[in-house]
Image (cartoon, rainbow, N blue to C red; front, top):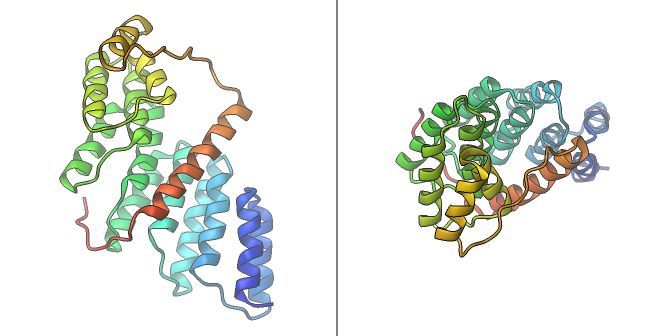
Length: 249
């Protein structure tokens, strides 16, 4: 066996979110004197990102550090996976720390990383921080996507008091920028401005499309949604060319 063989096994563990098995095979590889590469570390970090809980956010950051200590440079994929793990755990402070660390390494953030960073702040209704991220994106020429708009609208909805006017303005800008008003975006808008006003906006701006009925998702449904969103974000990330030399915040 070689590093490619072990990396493939670790990657299989990562796809199922099995952190313990991914870490086990990493240790077996090193015991045999086989040095891990960037793909190996990224796979383990990805396993942490797919597993819920604050502990896995800490583990993802720890593996990021182990990669650097091993002399293996981390790329935007690895950093974004750690930020994503922090977002799922609701650890906004850790997510921001890793985001800044990515910038310090000269890696320019892209929309997938920005959306992952905004997520934990949106959960707590910190619309001021989410808007700050949005403003920084504008200054760096980063276009928002539906995931970021969903996070921004959710922040307005969760905030107390709700930020209805800001939510409507955000939605109008998003449509003007070509963002598709999918069910997730419209549901977040409905929570922010109220169902009746959301219906009016659908009639005015979206050819009268229906407003989805918001239902508190079950734990299983939430996990499936997170996995689906992560897969789509990874596809977007793979289509984004690597960039470096960005300015830090």
